[in-house]
Image 1 (cartoon, rainbow, N blue to C red):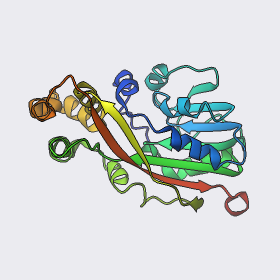
Image 2: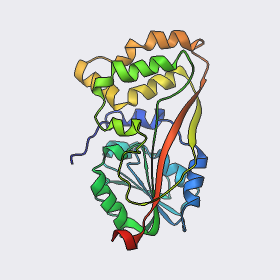
Image 3: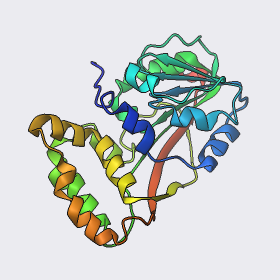
Length: 253
């Protein structure tokens, strides 16, 4: 499977505009591990998840197939960034307590990734994968974002996007799965932050490449009108869909 690089071009914007996960998510993940020595954050992007894992783990290995993403990741002495694909890394065998994938599993060769996860996880280690849905802001704003997502740039989403819409529930998950609590991202965003986030979408970038115009311009005025005072920030919410499971070496080796 060829690496589908839809994010290197906007790597700097990605690090600036992508939403931040709640601290409670990472506290929960750490609580699921027997030990918190080493964690692998796969497809780390700009290092958002890796940075959030710092308070809970002694060492973080953060990989991404995109060199541009790694170049824009926030440095930290506990984080070892590596430009490596999800399916083949230089991580030592049976050395990882937790492997995480935030909003990226759908881009992988999933079967090959699982083989790599089983190689690097310690027996009893944990794999956690999650994705998040569309933003929800208000009754007037949400329909415009939904129209943008489905109608304006809809044809430019890759087929893998369907896996996110299904909350990863349709993906085979050959680990001893655990029931997870429900997590939600909440933040106060300006209108410019919303526009910046929409521009990081892979379908937005594919639209721009195909048509040499920015599709956000098609909703900019309408979204500005319903926003009200553009200098004020609004509460943005989005739900997280997570699957988490334990690697049982006696079952899978």
